Amino acid sequence: MKRKCQSRRLLLPIMLALIMIIPCGVISSRKPLPQPLPPSTMEVWGQAYLNETLLPDGKSITAWIDGTQYGDYITIAGGWYNLNIQGDWPETLDLKEGGVDDDLVIFEYIDGNDVYYSNITKDYVMNGWSVTPFDLYFNSSVEEPTELKINEICTDDGFGSQYVYLYNPSASPVNLSDYFLQKDIPGSTNGYDGATVALSGTIDAGGLSFVDLGAGGFLETVADELKLVWINTGTFIADGNDVPIDRVEYGNENQVPDDTILVDAPAPPSGWFIRRTPNGQDTDNCLADFQLYEIDLIPPEPATNVHAELTYSATDDVTIYWDLSADDGGGFNDVDHYEVWFITNGWHSTGDTYAWLDTAVIPSGTTSYVHVNRGADNGFSFCYQLRTYDTAGHETKTLIQAAKYAKSMGVAPNPSRWWLVGSAIVQSSTSIDHVVQGLNLPGEGLMAWDADNQKWLSNWTARPYSLNDLTDITNEMGFWLKIQPINTRLCTAGYIANMSIDSHTGWNLVPYPYAERDKNTDDIELDLIANCPNYVPGSLTIFDVNEPYRIRLPASDVISNNEEGLWIEVTADTVWTVINY
Image (cartoon, rainbow, N blue to C red):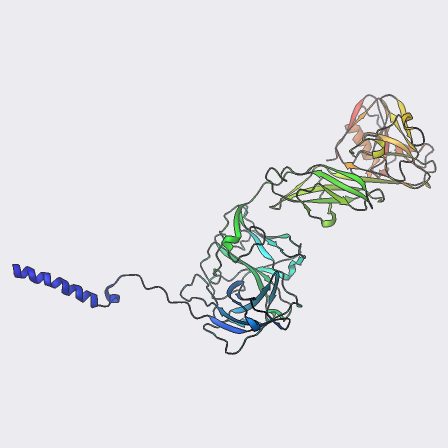
C-alpha cells in the first residue's frame, strides 16, 4: 500500500512536466493575442513652397482625407517635409484610422489665420512611399475657401425638424452658394459622396447662418457625421477637387467611413442640440469643442418704451429709442441682438410688410438706432417696429410702433398760409417748441379751439411769450398753423397708440387719429358713428385750401396724410375711441 501510494505521488510531477511542454495553443482557452500593428503609413516627402518661395523651418504641413487630419510634419530648413500619413486598420471595420487605397489626400498649410491648400493632391497607397520628391506649392493669390464652421447641430427640435447653424469666423461676408453640406455613404470603404444639401445666401462676418434641414431625416439622431464642403471652381487648389473644410461626428456611428479618429460629440436627444462653445472653436476634438444645450422654446421678452425723436447733428435724423428687453441682462439673459424694421408712407399693425432698416444687427445692450437723413429735411413719413432676437433665433416684435410723420405745406396753393393740422403721435413733450418742429418752423403762429371753455387759444411768435395762452399741444388736439411766406414742413416723432379722444359738447378740433394712411372719409364717418357716442352724424369737416374758410364737408375724400386736422360735433361730452393695433 505504501508503494502504491508512493507511485501515485511520483505521477504528479511527471504530468505537470508534460503539460508545460505541450504547446499552449493546443489546450489553452485564453483570448487571442492583441491585433497586429496597423499597416505601414504612406510616406510622402519633398519641399513646400508659398508663392514660389520655400517655406521656412517650423511650419506645419498637414494631410487630410475627407475632412479628417491623418498626418502632420513641421518643416525643416530648406522647406523640406516628410509626412507619414496614417493607414486604416483592416481588422477594425467600425473605425477609420487612416487612409485606404485610392483615398484622395489633400495637403494644407496654415500660417496664423491664413489657410492654404496645395496645388496638387495624392491618391493614398497602402504601405506606399515616394521614391522621388513630392513638392507642394501653396499660393496666396488664388481664391481659397473661408474656413466656415458647422457650429450647431439639432437632429430633432422636439417637433421632428432638424437644423444646422454655420459660423463665419472671418472678417468678411461669405457667399454660401460656394459651399454645401454632405454626408458619407454608411458602410462603404471610402464612399465619401453621400447625400448633400445645397446652401444659399450670405453669412456675415462673425455671423451665424441658419440651415433648415426639414423633417426628412437627413441626419441620423443616434449617431452621424456631417461635412461642410467648398465647391472648387478652379484648378490650382487640390487639383480642382472640392475641399471638405469642416467635419463633425457625434454619437459613435461605429462604421466606416463615417466614424474616424475624431473624438465624437454627444448625440443630442430630442429637444436638444450641440454647439461649438465658444462659437467656432475647433480643436479636432468634437467632444471638447461641442456642448449639449436644451432648446429654448421661449421667445425673448420684447423691448419696451419704443419711440422716435427728431435729432439734429450734421444731418437731420430720426433716432429710435427703446428700453432693453427684460431678457437683456436679466431674466433668461439670452438676447442676442435687436433689429429695426420700417415702412415708408405706410402702416401695418403687426409690421408684416416692413423692411429691415439698413440690415443692421444691433447688439444686445443697445437702446437706440439712428435713421440718418430722415428727419425734418425729409418729406416722407415712417413707422418703425423693433424686433428682439434671442440666441436660439426666436423673434419677438414690439406691439407699439414708433413713428415720424411729415406734412409739407406750400405758399402757392394756399396764399392765406393757414393750414389745419394735428398729430396723433404720442410725443415725449407737449410743449409747442417740441411739437411744432420741421422745416422753417415754428412759423408765424398757431391757434387751437378749447372746446371745454368754448374759446380760441393762440401762440404768436412775434409777441411776448407771456401773452400766449397756448403753450402745449397734445395728441388729442388739432390746430391752425400759419406758416411764414416760404415752403414749410411740419414733422413730429414719437409712438403710435390706441386713441381715446375726449370731446366736449359742441364743435371739437381734433387730429386725424389713425396710423393708417389713405383713409376714405366715408369710413371715418362710419367709425365716428360706431365709436364716438353722441357724435352728430354728417358733422365731420375737413381742410380744403380751395374753400374761402379752408374747410368743407367731405364727399368721399381720401385723407392721405397723418397730420391733418378734423372738425367734429358732439351733442354731449364723450370719448372717440380709435383702435390702431
